[in-house]
Length: 189
Image (cartoon, rainbow, N blue to C red; front, side, top):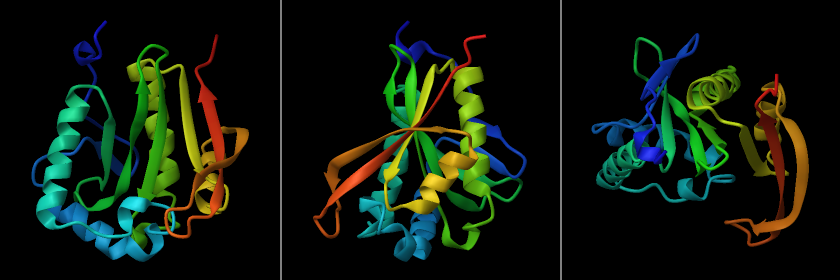
């Protein structure tokens, strides 16, 4: 089946969050959340080093919507249920429909850090991927030095599969870095 023909919801809820794909009009509030969190994000997220204009963010969310609808990348916003306040971002990336498998990425807005929202999102997104989309494998990758990101993967019951040595260069320092690869696979029975 062609990926674009796969039917699944554009949003779903967890206990405290609405997790949904980007929509027109999300650009300005998304940029505001990134600006507020830039200092904590830029160490791990190359896209947060320099915050783009409001117009560029609006373009990004509209392109994100198109990619979601084409089933090429399932970028999703994390919103507080009933208020719509942006808590952070997540998604199912590096999509390989032949398995199907995905990689979960995530970031949290500074004012919501340390409150369990990202673990809740990863658990909800994993359930969505396995039960609704039919995923067979989900991965989480993070810099070996990003202990907070690795802790999320562990709390969400992902297994540490490997430390990929000298996998990349740090976007700020240029030094070699190692990547932790966590995974979760669909139950066979």
